[in-house]
Length: 217
Image (cartoon, rainbow, N blue to C red; front, top):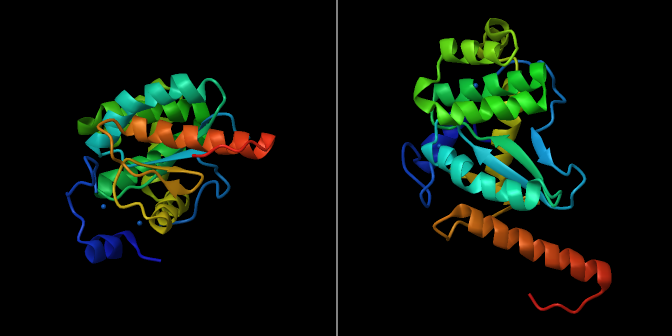
């Protein structure tokens, strides 16, 4: 499996983009069984994984513009399981941010993770040890302790596992969306449109299999 450094070198990725997206280290984890942060129906047969880098401006745009559409139509209605996946490839701050966020999840729970994650995407220019500590403290956590553990690599194995799995799926830039482990090609101005079309196609396939319908897709 390629390391982040090898991935960057072999693919030639630095600050380039992938269809208006951002394109590309570890100690023992505090909780090796920490699951990907999830919203929606955990038992859904449609699992939407969003690979993101907290320094990627296009990830901030996806969270601001596409996520609300998916939330209203599919997350809040229980149609999909929506999961965050870490794909930090834009530098040290990206890796540190991912570790800190998973520290928040491990220490404060799933809801606080999503709140903290959104704040990081909305304040990308401010990401730093002081900002992380202060923001976590405002959320009711022990900011200094969580940040110190994160920067020492406490959740690195969790972050690395997401990154490596993303590589296996063919993720080369962020945001990238995989539905049931199949990457969704980005062809529309709004990535949400591509994701919605893919979700609807799977819903019809499930309906067909369940009811024995002869539906041509």
